[in-house]
Length: 200
Image 1: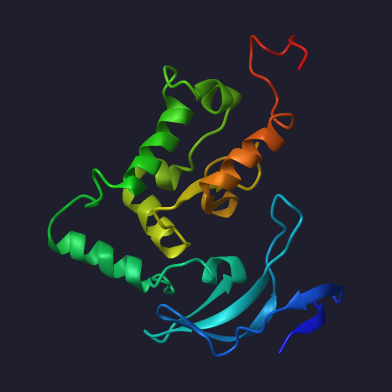
Image 2 (image 1 turned 120 degrees about the vertical axis):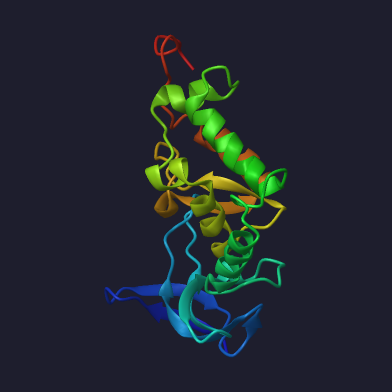
């Protein structure tokens, strides 16, 4: 059943149709009920947030956009933990060297900390950093990515273009949307020296 209005935790009524996902399964997750709405994205939209039960017995929260991604490996995070446990048993550091996901990690680190990177002026030189947890432990970044919607057709995106790379400020989006966001956000980013005196 679709609802034309919802009331959030603040008592505000939110208009718009929400497709009911209750009872549907996505990978290891089965939707139990809607529990509100997620944060607004860059386009001002808010996706419905759902309470889900994982096959392992744990509960977690996911938004519609995460659940609807074409993947069969959705879980509460237990799938990522199993993957990391397998790597630990194999005595590997993170087991992702050469993978696209590890490439995303290296690219993120290079943009923030390598002055010779062609994107450094827009990231590291502006003070954009990677949170301590991810910077010191690639495995922590990989675990977060696998538990939060990563797939090989997506790219990492910061919700706040002036914020750092950290769990609360990052999500995964299609590359086509990343290009659009780069164009729309170019006027939001303070210019680094020596470009501050240049008129855009």
